[in-house]
Image 1 (cartoon, helix red, strand yellow):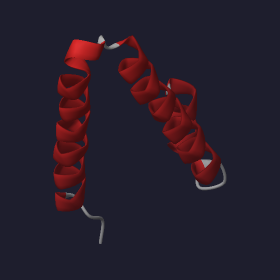
Image 2 (image 1 turned 45 degrees about the vertical axis):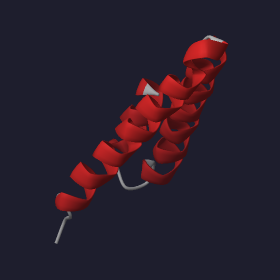
Image 3 (image 1 turned 180 degrees about the horizontal axis):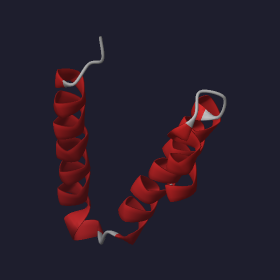
Image 4 (image 1 turned 30 degrees about the vertical axis):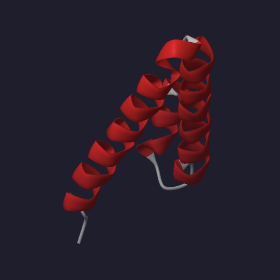
Length: 65
């Protein structure tokens, strides 16, 4: 994911960097769900959804332009 973030430094590499970072985050979410125990799977899913909601909300407040 950090490799993808370094691609966001210029307009020519921004799309590729964004795709790499998104793939890294998807792998992290899947690894979290796989590593969660069956009894805490629902908790892991809710924590991930909470993180997505907070990130979406904070990202939508900081629009450029």
